Image (cartoon, rainbow, N blue to C red; front, top):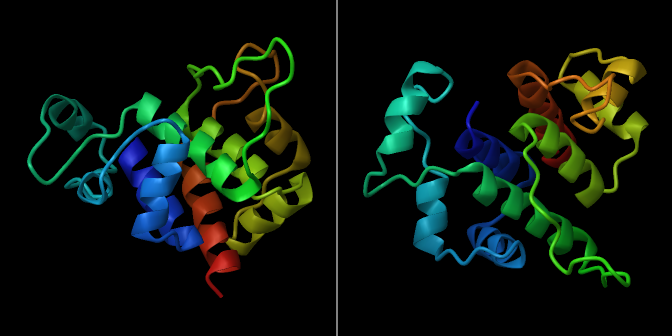
Length: 172
């Protein structure tokens, strides 16, 4: 799944309105108009296929804007601020968090966990709602830092089912 697909699914799962999407991007440090947000939320043809990523990466049409890693992480940072409020930086900390090089799926899990104040039990329950069983050890590995010896890359299946579980939980 590409970043656009993750944004579309997250928006649907949590029922985020267009104006809120613009505000979240703004809180994350990216200025986008409502029309530009709608272009980011446009589904690419066959976006689940890896083959088309290279085609769409080079080509931005009038009705589509590709969400790169910077845009995606900025949205997730803005989503945390949107849900929890702005946190005053401690002495010696930068005001804006540094962007990571982490895979989008792992980043999605971590940042949504923070924004929605989910516990590990809540996350396991969300996957259970989607019909997927994830062990505590697997969850811990998915939430680890990239260089850690027990770090595990989050596959599309886990991310897709997590977002599906969020939709079941929050769109009742």
